[in-house]
Length: 338
Image (cartoon, rainbow, N blue to C red):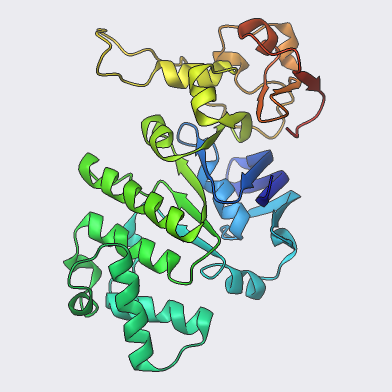
């Protein structure tokens, strides 16, 4: 595989009034060039913090304390702030979930696009900046792009603002695009349009996408692979159709079971009892054990990873061999990495 991004035992801790919180705990991800990977899990599982850790956009009370992030031939966790600023926006783009707060309300759309080209491509000529900005807006389907350069963010609808954010993120044709819940505040119709736009841009430009979401339907429509995150740790990963068809981890199974379906005539949705573990720093066992119907005494220690299909699929659960028909080539091993 041609791996463009890899995290190795990435661990991030946050200092809070209640103590130290391990928000990202020994996370191992691999993104294959040209594919879209969904990072899914319930709110508070550490998805957005993982993205922030990858690109060095952590708040002052948060810090990567262990592990590394490899992007092509660079180790991002070794880069200085100035070096990361040269990479962010040029080689790695990012689309956030709230377009209104992502854009500066006091600057025109044209000014915000031009800033990207000035900073990352060193362009100063006003005519060239205007041409590139119009092309960027046209690439994401903004009508009357030349006229809209003078508009302010409040003059755009939610869907159009998100398109502007995407235009800024891809303006310098990045190799990797991080999408952190990019359709959360949008209605269903606009969500579909934004996803189609992202998929089209990905195919045209050969981008790799890390797509953070808690919406399993969107993940399945848009992504090739999936990594399931719970309480700061990855618990299962693999090709998305295979994982959703035969979930190996009880948490993945619970997420899928609790997803509403139009064809299912039930009075109540299935739910996962309890809540995600809040304090993760001192936990040595399976984080999901307190909510798991398959839990047993052995779950007091962190489970082996089981991997099969030449490592394409993997899950961290003692019960994997008992719950699904694991192929004969499945192999268990101790440790965090999968």
